[in-house]
Amino acid sequence: MIQEAQRMQAIPPYMFARIERMISEKRAQGIDIISLGIGDPDLPTPTPIIDELSRRAYDAANHQYPSSRGMKTFREGVASYYNKRFGVELDPEDEITALIGTKEGIANINYCFVEPGDINLVPDPSYPVYDIATGLAGGNSYYMPLTKENNFLPDFQAIPAAVLSKTKILWLNYPHNPTAAVADLDFFEQAVAFARRNNLLICHDSAYGEMTYDGYEAPSILQVTGAKDLAVEFGSCSKPFNMTGWRIGYCVGNTAAVSALARYKSNVDSGVFQAIQYAGLAGLQDYCSFVEKNRAVYAARREILVGGLNSLGWELPYPKGTFYVWAPVPLGHTSASFAELLLNEAAIVVTPGNGYGPAGEGYFRATLTLEESRLKEAIERLRKALGRVEF
Ligand SMILES: *Cc1c(COP(=O)(O)O)cnc(C)c1O
Image 1 (cartoon, protein in one colour):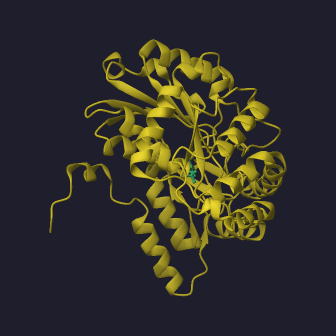
Image 2 (cartoon, helix red, strand yellow):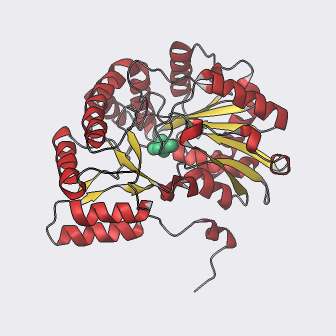
Image 3 (cartoon, protein in one colour):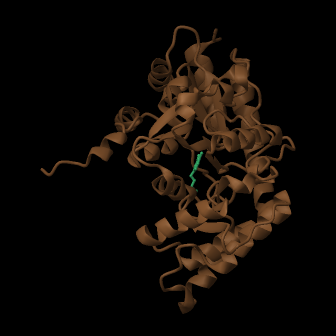
């Protein structure tokens, strides 16, 4: 067999492989598994968005290669969303590119800026793509631990100067997967000042920017004066419009970074099917009404799951954003041993927190992507299996 390239070693063994094997064994035995492990909306894509796709799919003008940067109409739609939602002006010509889902752009932007041996600052815990794609591009991750004491915000002062001198990208993600933490504009101001002092590119992943509760509205990092000098923001139609399977997102902000990413992409992909761009645009144009519906559904589920866990002895705050609940494991457990216990004793799947980075040890992540009756059932099973928990 031909030898794999060295860079493939940046891809760790799939962290959930063992759990998935255990799940399929249980299902094969006829056990009714409740999976709180899935970060994928269970709600359908809204009908007006599907209608827009169907209509545009019949138009032969949409059947050829799209431009990799995205149609001008789509980019103008993103600009007008940013203007309406954040009061941020974006030039559709050179401050916006479409993406085949944000995951694609998050991975690819590393190839545009990271040289072998460079460092990226990566939140710990976090969405695994920042770290893995840094490694694929030949770079090294420096983990910024996100702790409860710091409200799950990185402590920039704790990063050594020797690290900063080799750093290219500062990765941020608020509202945050997996901790559900949020950041205010004041934090983004500090991040921009820090990046300016140290000559870094900020890549802010705002995949959950519209998934917020209790009247909280997540800011854009581009609302910070001068942020466009050094920051880009990734946005997605996946989570706000229940479109994870459709693959459409965007990267906006700093012209040089957006252009580099678009230039890179034009050599490795050929863009997003135009009918899907029109469908994503339909989502963005009417974002308020789609997002309101989702927020109501997840907020009611949050009540059941967080309220239920708290009735068993947890003392969790109600998350202001995302559809995740980030909870400590009870006394005497590790992330792995607790996830295994829940699977064996309650037929419930959660993801072990250390799968998102070493600082996630001692936590598990549960999701709100199941209907209320299943969440209630999950809480009842936990009550039977655990009784009252201690920490
Ligand atoms: C789901 C998710 C994404 C990926 O979104 P796509 O646009 O579907 O690729 C990006 N970042 C985070 C933190 C996510 O949880």
